[in-house]
Length: 71
Image (cartoon, rainbow, N blue to C red):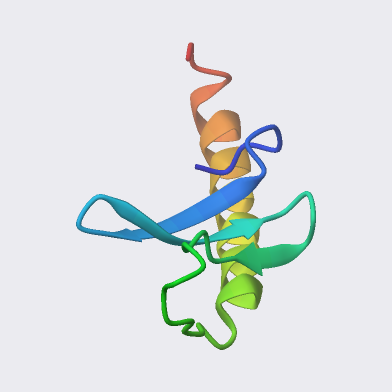
């Protein structure tokens, strides 16, 4: 979800990791083998950063509303 310790946001297809946002390195990563054709996700890292911000804001609202529920 929106953990500071996780540091990634992953997108996959058919159970395979296609792309992930590495928040620690501040970049998008495509873990493809050297023989694979490269492709791009324009704006994907920026969208992942925005999604992380929304997730953290929603989490803060939930924690306040439910007064720190158990994990």
